Image (cartoon, rainbow, N blue to C red; front, side, top):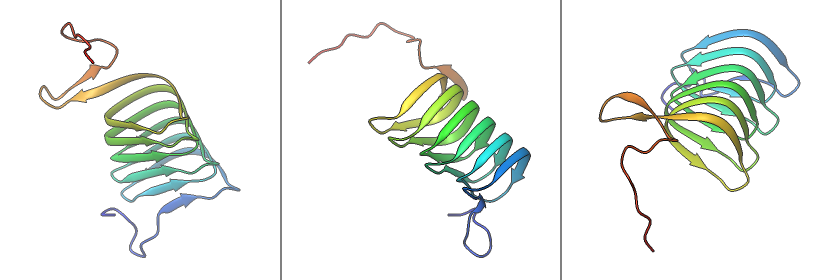
Amino acid sequence: MKNTEINGQYSRIEKSTKFKGDIISEADFRIDGVLNGTIKTKGKVIIGKDGKVQGSLECETADVEGMINGSLKVRNALFLKSTSNIEGEVFIGKLIVESGATFNAKCSMKNHEANQIKPLSKLSKSHEKTA
């Protein structure tokens, strides 16, 4: 991990912790407790199985096992594990979803060619499916 703390550990919110407010970090971050607010980091965010985020999250990459309700902006890849539950609005570079994940969100993916956000729900050309 390129953005970890000096001691190699993630900054973290433990399972027994509830945090209300805004977090800005240069390092990777792990949430196993509850965050009501905003987190912005240039690194990776991991939402553990018991982790819950109510608010907004902005990061480079994210691995989600827990719950997010709000706005999610991931510049690179969003990995949704089978236990994840996402609701809200999502802007991503790539989306990787395991079977069993719950994804109820308005989602836009970055169009690398035009360097813009492109809605996933609309196709620019007619597409035909073949077997």
